[in-house]
Length: 127
Image (cartoon, rainbow, N blue to C red):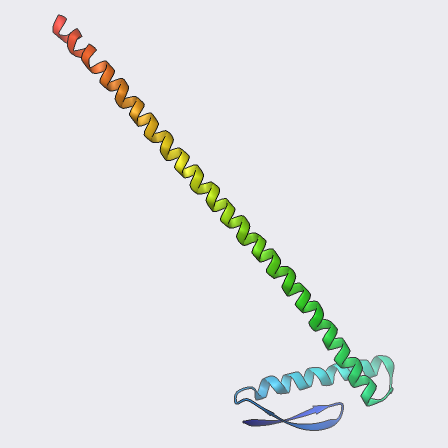
């Protein structure tokens, strides 16, 4: 297990994390520290605990919005998948209809050719 020192609101925190996650944890710590500093700039010195709670609520709100967007995108993606499946089914049905029509036309042409063949032989024999 790796350990990282993170500075948030001027205080150092030593934290454990999985191997390879050190830089990620340090980035998260810097993000929280920046949010607290931004809130401090907006609201002044209202106490570290209040600033930390406000930063946590801000982050939680962003997370809730991101989750809602993800749900909406997943729903949209599912709708797109359904539309794609429907379009493919229509395409296949259209291809089948075209194939049937081609077969019917080919049969009709063969029938016409068959009907004309005896007439051609009798017309040739007469001459």
